[in-house]
Length: 398
Ligand code: AMP
Image (cartoon, rainbow, N blue to C red; front, side):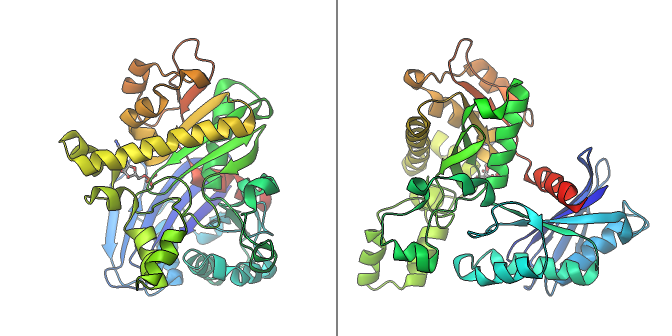
């Protein structure tokens, strides 16, 4: 069964065509600069040269048109006809309070997603445009929505209700939702599989550390807490996002003349690694600067390491124990120094790395990095959100 996975962002659209249930990627690519100047489509097939074309992409439907054209192209394509695609899976950042599991997309689902755009203003509209575009170009093909928030829907009230007037939850849906759920779900299940254990018997902390970062506590396969909240802004320091700060900083800056938009932009786009280091939001650049002696780059990394450590401690307390710690995403999978530093001086909790294994582990592999005898097992698991989406899509489209 061929499943197309679509991840629509505000000006970009990523795609992957899977053969399921094998999970084999037949082709994948990226449409960039949708609705702005500089439209580009990059199309990749395993074992073949990448194909890149510059072309105006007026909207998400136009980008999808290119995707389907390339997938079926006589020379560059991997299928003969669009009808070979039996289902489409959409990555959707926010499922609100109602969409707690992956589901088939119908008018009711799209209407609900439209109704929650006010709490998902950045990611909602492009995701909806991607769904509508697919419907127009692939009429009759079942579509499935997979939500970044749904894995977190098992959190207890004490974790998702903010201690502000309860009416704000009832009337404005202000609560912790959590994000990156598809990634946390994938790596949690994968690590249990790698260990030959039932996820129901494990207390797991998953650290998704990339441009955006979040940490999740999973007890018996169910999320009990996560660092991101009402928006992906909460939690640990990220590439350009501050993570949690005293909310009074916001009102103080506004009283000093900054507008709400300016404060939002500062916290979302100009903070985190970029804001503290003054160098870059890219962890590799900040690590290089720190290694060369740059004090603010060193400080930015220290804040990141310290934040991760604090949440590991907090979430271990929340679960009354910990069996497995997982690192994933761009930084978690690749930055062995970060893993070593975060796990250092954590023997009280039972965490200890085999530093040699941590240093030499091959990229892209699922690996147990723990020292012999460590009570808590520490793993690196490369995330694969697209595969998880393809799996849900294949299951629900049947
Ligand atoms: P993601 O959002 O998962 O694509 O992750 C992007 C982040 O991973 C960027 O900050 C990259 O700098 C970071 N990253 C990728 N490779 C490395 C590496 N070898 N060391 C440190 N950070 C890395």
